[in-house]
Length: 205
Image (tube, rainbow, N blue to C red; front, side, top):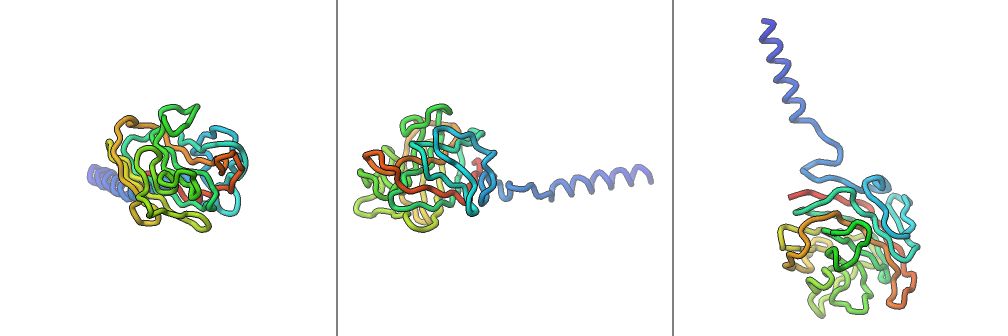
């Protein structure tokens, strides 16, 4: 009888563990930012004034700055909710291979910049990899948006508000952290408007 009770207890424990909900990991998704929570999941690179404000993570001053994930990712999906103005210069830089200096050459830059001087690589594009079809241009300014980014091997796909904007093939960068950007807005270095991130999730593939 004692042996049966022990076995029953062990089975019960295993079932409970299998059904356990781990916060932030539902469906394989890891929530890195949720409202104004989650800054501790990122390292700060650059001089942007990142802060929790109004239910979001915000930056609106500085020359250029990033929130860079502490973890590295290879194949993954990202879901990110953001608010931008038409002159906001921001983006999500993925598979970065240098944690100290983040650029469009050592990361893939999924852009947020409606008024970029070269519009084909503006909002919805992967800079220098996949251009938004012209004359179809995506505008993010003045409202909340959702980016969905998939990187699997050399295949890169971007969706903005549920609509695919670009797909591209590039194999030069295989793995790395990803960063949320704030930068000055104009080609002449004008400050530009800020960026707000409300929810950011990642799911390894």
